[in-house]
Image 1 (tube, rainbow, N blue to C red):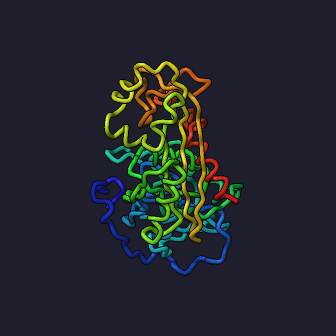
Image 2: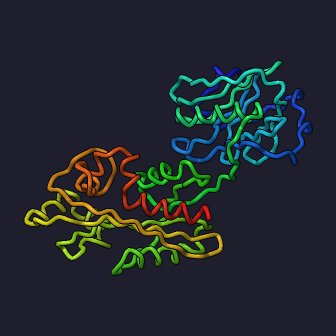
Length: 336
């Protein structure tokens, strides 16, 4: 089967084909790894990864969660999801590396590695910009000119059912070696006077149910003229009456200054609990504007802006938002 004949709908069922041409023992596993590109379980987001390895003579395999491409000073190595070495290429045999886009219902970018004897095709993601960066890094590492820093990619479980939140985590953590992984797990939320208390209780309730490290999140809108309401009840109010109901309740409120506040809770692998707080001041307007974001974003204008969170780009919002501020504090802690 050639690359053109691969059925992308059933590609996860493809298995390795043994090939006597592969010299499984021809690699010094103690050699320093200069670059590592790994797959991950969120193909739409995290992008220092690959999805499929194959070559045109029929040797191919889906790269699953722990599959990886590793480059040493002398060789380019391919490992399967069980971390078993499956292919080893002498870097001196590589003549050229080209980046292509596979045009299909499953659009991905792949590197075509041309050697003296074979042509290999290794996919590196669905995001163009990161795939291009992966391509440059791969070229540089194989030629011995890579100057990046190798960091082990660590999965960081984010307990949420909100796809908008997980996208913000992935966007903000993009340039770190932490890979946000969505975990949709219910846990009890207590009625408390602060977001910090809610998060602290949530971390404790998940301990023993989910292997750390993991992060939980709680956020709220605190309206000055309503003595901080809805505050810790923000989600309940939103789920009960929606934004239209919130706006109706505020019809006679002239002073609309408020704070968006977020508290992130981290449970470390050592069982330690840490909290990180972010706050963004602004006003609630009397109409919904914008199609981006989620929750209260269409009615919140941050100070210094004339657009709602829902009208800002993701980059603009993440640079100033309550959650963005809390995430950067979390990243700073994790990188210590």
